[in-house]
Every structure is written in C-alpha cells, then in structure tokens.
Length: 159
Image 1: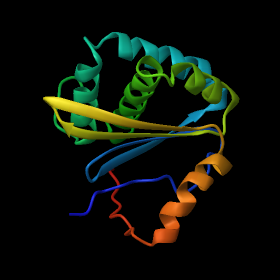
Image 2 (image 1 turned 30 degrees about the vertical axis):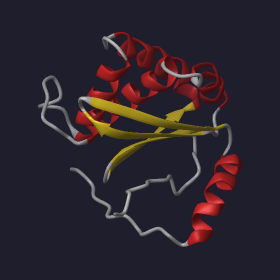
Image 3 (image 1 turned 90 degrees about the vertical axis):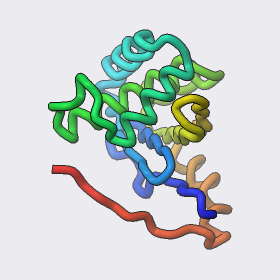
Image 4 (image 1 turned 120 degrees about the vertical axis):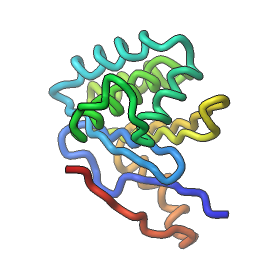
C-alpha cells in the first residue's frame, strides 16, 4: 500500500512554508515574515480554543479533508486555507517540543514546517518536522528523492 507523502517544492519567498497533510490531502501556506507577529498571535488564539491535542488534530483532519463545518460553510477557498494554516500553526506552537524553535524560525523567516496527520478522528496523531532553512530541508529531502520511490501528486485548485 502506498502512503501519500507531501513535500513543498519551492522555497519560501517572503517567510516560512507550512505544509499540513493528511492521507491524500495537503495544504501549503507561507507565513510572511512581515506578518509573523500577527500569525503567531492568531495561531495561539486558535489553539487556545481547542480542548486538548486530540481535539485540535481532529479539527485539522476535518478542515484539510474539506468536510463541511460551520463556520466555514460560506468561506472562500482562500479563507479556508488561511484558517487551516493558522490552526496548523497553533498546533505547531502549542504541542510537543517544537513551539519555541518554530516561533524563532517564523520570526526570522526562511524555514519549512511539515505537519503530517495520521490515524482517524478518534485516534489522531501528528508527525512534525521543523527545518530552520531551505537548505536544511533539502538535506532531509535528498535521500527520499534518491530512492525514486515517489510519484507526482495530483494537483487541484479551488475557485
């Protein structure tokens, strides 16, 4: 069975790349360095609205799967993407040992974050990878690309 793995293809242009994935779904956001303080504040506010880590991960799974949920029913694709990105950022800052390092990377720009969700709503899990620079991320990606065991993903866009 093939496991879907998603990776950013292009370096950040104005900040830090955050890629959240779950099964065949993936969403990429770039957090502009100039808006780092706002993004950190909003991510923290969103994270504070969840009961616990499992609730937060379950909500991320639903958002990335585009399951209709109030208050996102009437939101545009861009608005949904922004909410998903901020919720992922809030998770990154609030759980595990990555919060302080992630904050420093966002403030300085140029980093890459991967949040890979797995499991199901009842038993969600997350694997987090934090890279402080694009070159550090490329070193991680090098062995994966050398194996040749990957397939181009199906891309889609929302209007």
